Length: 354
Image (cartoon, rainbow, N blue to C red):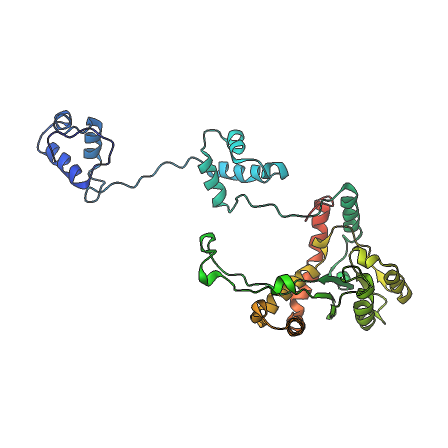
């Protein structure tokens, strides 16, 4: 080590530390060593005092005291999730209001430790006061129902997009890695097939595909098509002879078609009054999600299939019907069993989102 060294901020090397410690062990004072080497006296003293803690004169781990305790962490988690406004508060404002002495990075780390971070809010149709009131009244009406009561309901809905890609484990940085990419053609964009399905307790299930209505301007599925190809085809097989069963369909305009409503009344089917903007309360939404997973599991080739459109459509239909038969009764009964909890959730939310 040179006898005169310019004072700087860089970290001492292991050899330099050994040199300073050796000179002090030889009887030189800290001040003399500092004067001869140009190393600040405080650095010389620190190097000598920490020499026994260092292994082979290597640097000690750089650690600092934790800036928050368990109580502060709990309060931070609570304050960021108290209501809609606190969930959306900017980080700078959170820091100023919570504990200004903490850095933003420290706050982010504490939240991240609890798996809390900013996510894009899920979209949902805006619930007006009358919508919330209707949802709350619906929940109050059925709050005492048990599983055996919910088994009496036949849930129904339509779904169009039943062919989708596969999920996989990856980090955000691996988004475009070759083994994380699912090749696909124009299938999802160009080919859409609407299905109508229903399910309930007592192993009640029904599924059918719906063609477009040639009488409609856009050629889409209308109430007339749902009546002719779904309700008249499936409901009599399930509901006839079971006057205790309750049919559920949402309040979509296609379900309000006059001839459809009249047919249900003429058949004597009891229809559940459904609150507006409430797909979150219909368990068949989870059936569609399960069906999509099964379609991919059974026929992953559909996602990138090429060929004549008619051929692809027939293969999609066949795959969907095959996957429908694979849905287990245990899964369906778990959805029915969850309805009591969903009703209570709507009540707690005052008719708001669940």
